[in-house]
Image (tube, rainbow, N blue to C red; front, side, top):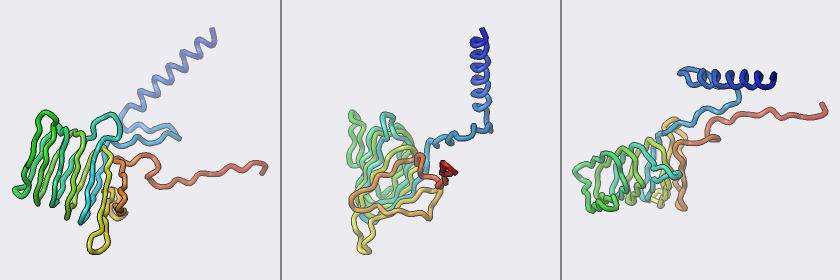
Length: 189
């Protein structure tokens, strides 16, 4: 009988604790990691290269992309609005497969869910604020640079694209934040 009462008290405490934690401004128990943000902003650019933004898993990626470029952009499965400047034209559109190709020199802005976004060309600078995986492939320009990317939270921490490609997970997961020193336990002292 006591075990049954103890079980009910424990269950009641767990329910009450979860209700309190669900309230805005509630603190987390010590040792629990902070929730992962649903999106993060990345700033990236290159003189010559290509990129692809796609899903991390089964869910469609989503976000807002704003880019200035010369070249070609393939947008697949977009569920949302897209804007282009007068220098960028839609060259191809397949309604059945939900694919559109844009070509030119100008700007492109889109926002929503999509299957993938691919670009190749030159003189590209962009921001992406969302949830996805980016693959960046740079080519050496006349200054032997391949392109850079940085998270908006740390704009001065720029990383190179490289020529073999780099994968950038957005938003960053655990392990990308500030390093936390652990206390090592020594036995026998």
